[in-house]
Image (cartoon, rainbow, N blue to C red; front, side, top):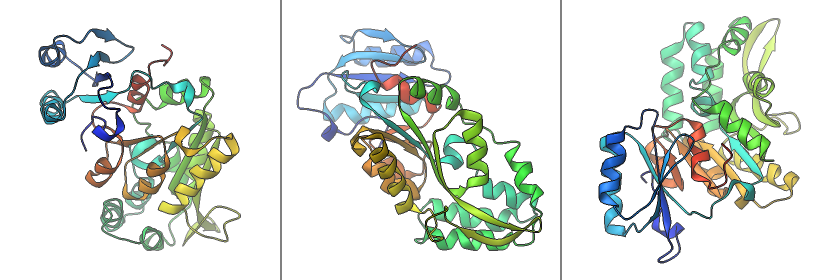
Length: 304
C-alpha cells in the first residue's frame, strides 16, 4: 500500500485529514497538495502539515500517491478523531526500525563474515526464507568462535533511527507502555532499553562461553529455548497488552520486515517503517521518508 489509509479503514463519507511530512518538506510540495485540495484548511503541526477535511475519492488515491512519490514525502490519510490517549501500548521492532542497522550484520562484518551473513538476513527479511528461526540459527552458527568483545563494540554504537527519542518520550509521557520486541539479540535490546527508558524487552539470546560466541542462539528465559520469531513477536504484543489491561486494538506496532507481519496484524495502528514491499502492502500505515516520530503527527492530541 502507499502512505494513505486504506479505503476500508474509513467510514463512508467521513471527513478525513491528510497529513504531509518529510525531513525536508518544501513549500512547493505543500502547494502541490493544496492545489489538489483547495477547499481544505491547512494546519501546521510540530513537524508536519495537516490538510483538514479532505474528501479523497478512491480515484484520487493514486494521484495522491504519485504526488507523495514526486515530492518524496509521506502523505497519510487519518481520522481527525484518532487520538494518542486511546492507546496503551507501543511495540517496536529493533533492527532497521528503532535503530538503523541489523546488529547481526554488524557483528558479522567485524568478524570478517559480512557478506555471508548479510545475504541470509536480507532473504529472511524479504520472506524468501520461510523459517526465520532456521535462518537465524544459520547466521549465528557462522559466528562461532568470534570474540565476545565484538558484542560490546556493536552495542557502543547503535545508531538510533531519526525521531526515536521523541517518539518514545512522547508516548511514555502519554502513559503508553513500551515494548521492544526483536528476533535479534537481548544484549543490544537491553542496551537500548537502558538508554531510552523502554519498559520491557523480548529478544533472543546469543550464547557466550569463555568470551567466545559458541554459534548457538536461544529464546528468552522461560521459553524452553524457543526463538522469538514472527509468532513470538505477536505473542509478546498480546502479553504486553494483557498486562496493560487492554485489547491489541489499543496498541501501536512498528516494524519493517516479514517477521513483523503477525504483530502488525494485531495492532490497532500498524506502521510499516521504511519497510520491505510485502510489509508496506500489509500495514495500515507507512512511513517511507519521515522518522519514527512521524507516527505522532497522525494523532490529533499529540503534545507539542
